[in-house]
Image (cartoon, rainbow, N blue to C red):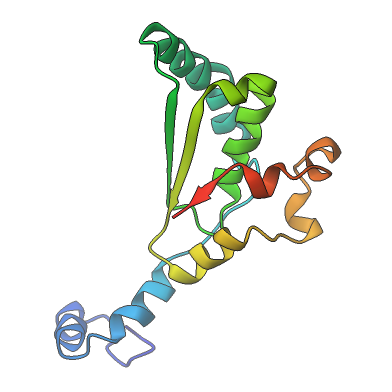
Length: 146
């Protein structure tokens, strides 16, 4: 709002948005933070690995279902959904092939999704990934970004 000269007037900026729909793109770019990192928030991924995933797989076995669908909302440039893929590979090993697993990653930022689809990360981005996983193709094979 300040960048467009509206100060703190939400009403004026709202009217401007109504008259200038292309402003939504600039607003979206400003309010999306795209903070992401492999294995970011380790407590969350530990809970996924040690509590959520075992329970999910137990329920699937009980129902005789091999379908596992995971949705990563607000995936930014993709490190979280790829992390989920790494954890699935780590926990299931060769049993991964006994399941029909899909990881759907979504974000409102199209530029971030394009980067997620590419799945190309620099060495600094991979700092939280073990050497074992960095030297395999797991990062490019595990997630379906849509």
